[in-house]
Image 1 (cartoon, rainbow, N blue to C red):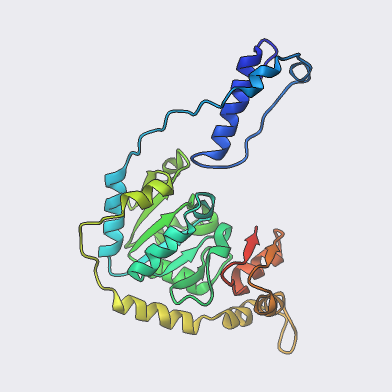
Image 2 (cartoon, one colour):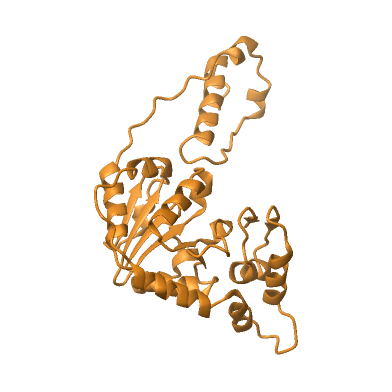
Length: 287
């Protein structure tokens, strides 16, 4: 904002900022108001004017989104990856309904660790270099990944992207522009779209999903073998008969109520939660 702006322009700028913050890819906005602008005398009547809504943009890529969903359902080893954008867009229920309707296993990023549910048969844990072995193994074994609301950065993929995407296709549905510029891999198909539009686009698919019973058996076997308890035992180096951060985290998760909120730092406490915290539906994990 600059001193030469009149009252109407200043108010319009603030209105636009609120629209940007609360629509599309919702999030915080920084407003820089110089001191001389703060000291301006304005006509208060401008504050009473209604906020003029921006014209709604078209919904591009509908066919691309339907094709991505079709590819997922027709694959033999489908997997859904949920990122923080699922919660930001308010599509948690739509995502879980899709997962349950088609019996597709799902994993989460560290930014969406509380979207998993340890008691859910299709919830397979948190993926990434600092996260759970079972989730990472299933990520590697899948042949088609639908990634919703994630930038698919190094916290998810690590640095060996070529190995991760070998023998699979990855469809990224993400509203943030320019994410595809980071990838030079034809197996990663990025679709810039709001998740609300994605779930609208796939309401009536005109195709028959592939049955993936063998894949679900493998998922169950991996989950039964690489449990939260085994993660705690594998990760710790404190020795037998000593408690580690992973042991403490696991026990805490078993005793916290379903409405609990856990706030993490950026050191071992976060690492232990990504690996050993049994998230109960309704809990919030703030990273």
